[in-house]
Image 1: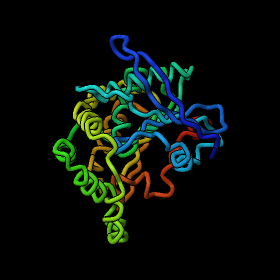
Image 2: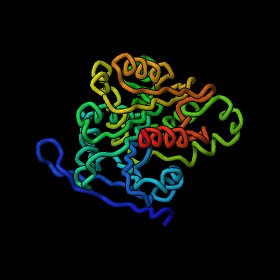
Image 3: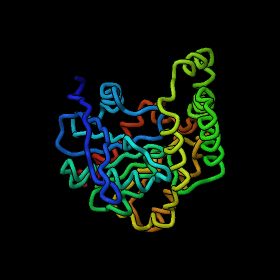
Length: 279
């Protein structure tokens, strides 16, 4: 398999000592652990070991990479704080004492809770295209997805998500292909998606950001139509004002899918982490 990529699963304790199952993907030949918390997705990571290893291949040489999915059984009232708790328990189950953490979109929301509640587990923190508290833009967008999914119109979720994710130039370039992308992109489990989408509304960690003491890299797109570029600026300003070693980078012309569109997105993260190692 590519870079030793493999899919595995853990059984860990959730709140109330209930056992839950979490799938994860691991790859890479390095010894330094790197944990990636992905964003809200239309599907689980099952069957995605090779594509994800390829997407994050720049880390394969220097790190042992772990990508954790959401728990299999997502209950009503699930929160981004629960994602952080599940990540912490998964790390401990794998004997990961501390790691470089990358959180993308909803995963970035959870990564902030992880850094606040479990600082001993977080060596460095990268927050990609995310926010620390809800704003009008993301509230309207996610409410739209939830409404469509709950009504059974899963195609509407995809049709709305694709143009919001990508930059105007990308949408214009691939305008003729977008109907095909929407047609063949399926929502795997509507009920699970709705519960995970609603978890976004529970993100409210802004006032606690001053508790984060590890180095932080905030990276996003200025034209983000889902969480907004201003949300990244807000996080960075709060962290810097509290004395945290924080760096901010925003791509001009890119939006929420900057992590896919920008060829140097992961390289910038690697550069940031490498600088902290050498310090």
